[in-house]
Image 1 (cartoon, rainbow, N blue to C red):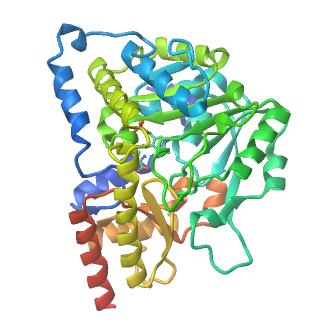
Image 2 (image 1 turned 60 degrees about the vertical axis):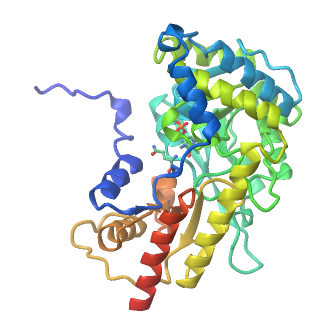
Length: 420
Ligand code: PMP
Ligand code: GLN
């Protein structure tokens, strides 16, 4: 057959880091600090609500409302309405979709038109670039850079946007900016002043903000997560995306949502009703019950949103100590599941014959997987092809793992250190 089979918009989006490294991790049976998923159990109240939902009658196994199961959108509106200090209309201002991925996909398809520019903050969760391209848009990148002046950057807080550089990216063609707060892979949590600079530019240039907040409950050492939608003038131009996967340590549950003003949200609903239609009823009901619990517990010691960051911070410290012990300097994250570390001090004889054109961090992680059976993710995967060459010495570890997994990773790293 001589005719071209694929749609041209797929030409720039062929490779996917998760597919590639998840396959490798499985093949080499690694201790997996690569892909971001917890290998410990979700909270028992979520498991209970899942069981109850399975046995909750026929309607739990049938279609539900297209834009979100009624009990879920109602509690999401109540929960996030309290946080944003505004009334949220559960029917018009919330869309539940298949994970944060589904919600982001609907947002890009609905609001980014052919030729529109979308500003993407580097490093970025990789799908923002592909989703921009699949919508016919043009990604425009702006980097978070380590602040110069006071020694090496040791915390994600040291990585900042240059306000002038950011401002220079806004043009009459800019339709949207996407931020990820807390950021994957860096762990940066934006301070209010930083969000204000972004907000001022969005308002000045009449630009929409997509704010991916899937790690919103996971902040460390007093870092405070602030929703950009809560800044004056931002609600009407922000789509906030989050997900039950990260909220309740159950990435397989695939329930995510977009929250925003009706005049934007209705377009996401149009995409959703004609593509995914709805997200599994069972999972939505179970997540609704879990959110009801968290609504009652909010701010209390029993709240999972309070307990989980405490647990994860201990894991983060544990991995930090181990990486320092083997001579690495991790960048301490203020939030999220991940920590990145510079690997340039590790002298490794990579077998370069097969993949010379790949970035160094890709080759390094492949070597780590094959030779040391330790999974990680190359950080250049979170950069545009233009920026990739300048960022080849970092890899990302996920610390949202069971202590036994972290111990196994420590054993590998320490044993390696002894051998060197
Ligand atoms: N955004 C970010 C920043 C992520 O790390 C992930 C992966 N969890 C997603 C979105 C996708 O989330 P979900 O699994 O809910 O689709
Ligand atoms: N969000 C996850 C991570 O950053 C992975 C997403 C995926 O596997 N597609 O590790």
